[in-house]
Image (cartoon, rainbow, N blue to C red; front, side):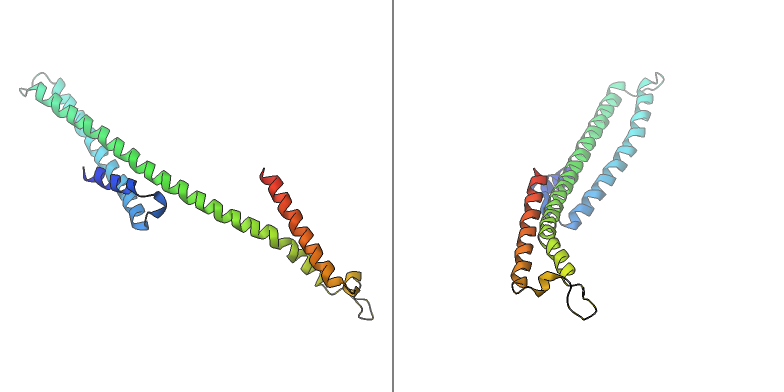
Length: 168
């Protein structure tokens, strides 16, 4: 019953807000429930042998009630394990969703800034002739700076359009 109350309490909060202690506790509860189930199964087999033994003077009706109680406990444990797994899966799904959103923002940021970094790197190289004059004609233009930013804006728009088209 204590496990059911604790898992029920955890189930009331959104999985995104679970502290690390709760996740550790959830793992511990899952492990303890497996150990309890592992302990009950052999006892159930022994009880079944006692029920089937005709030489026993103990009431088989009582032993069958005990066996039913053990079966009910195993079913309750299985349900609690499923509840714990559901909580864990919900937390992992929320974490994955949050991580995907973060990666999406990083990808959009990269789409915006990578073309600019490429062009900046290209125009930032030292292409000069033997006299020390730049060999890239745009560097000699009077409106070369405006041309650079126009090229940057076009590349950003193209990158964003490409990202939108690839997304759909």
